[in-house]
Length: 79
Image (cartoon, rainbow, N blue to C red; front, side, top):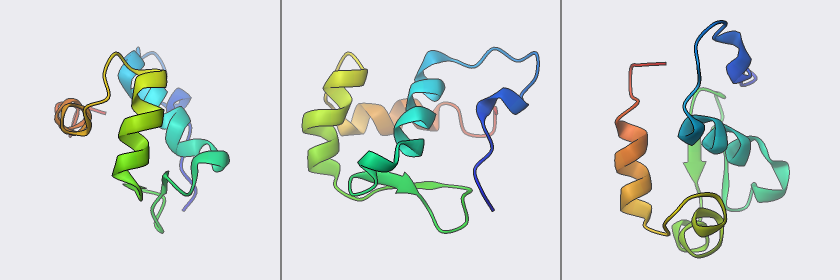
């Protein structure tokens, strides 16, 4: 199954955190670091160190992987 764009949630405002995360996962140039899982229903951070050092600070206000996971978990089941 191919990941569906966040726009399918018609009329629902998507939090910036989720939108940024989707864009990162969906960027094929970042596949060695973060990419969709086999089913397309999840994603995998293949290289947490590179993700924390390069991707997080460019896209979020921190470089803490644990904080990223904690924030991600706060959306579980909501969207």
